[in-house]
Image 1 (cartoon, one colour):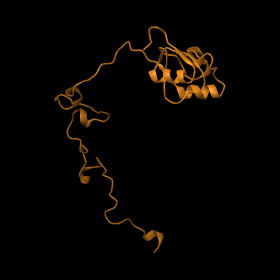
Image 2 (cartoon, rainbow, N blue to C red):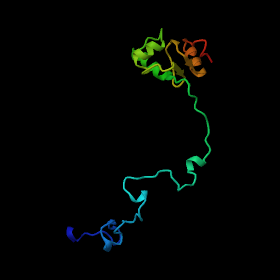
Image 3 (tube, rainbow, N blue to C red):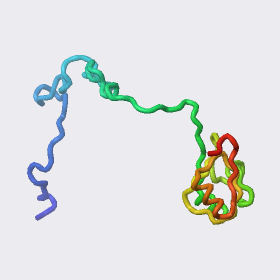
Image 4 (cartoon, helix red, strand yellow):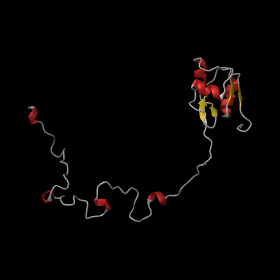
Length: 155
């Protein structure tokens, strides 16, 4: 056997259909696109159009509501806070939203910073943030620290 004797199994490969290459090809003239109309032209895609029937996305019920004036908080987990304290990038005695931004824990404040309880905090930290979950507050107090929240955002 030589390299030039190698062949695919019969039926393993199929020739590409060459559309619109004359009447002898069987797909000549209009190239399988029918006669005239928008869909026979190039560069047209009618997505979601169902020929006058109500489209599926309009038939399905819409659920929920997105509040237009909702507040978006930057999120900080306890594990990330501990990591920055261990690396010396953050002073545990006084953690405020400004120090969190300047140290790089969060990129920007948005509508405030919210403390979440994922991970562990071993340092005795005094934290002042816009919001905090109950689990996060308990974990900070268990480590000997405290969390101060504004009167409006207190849960």
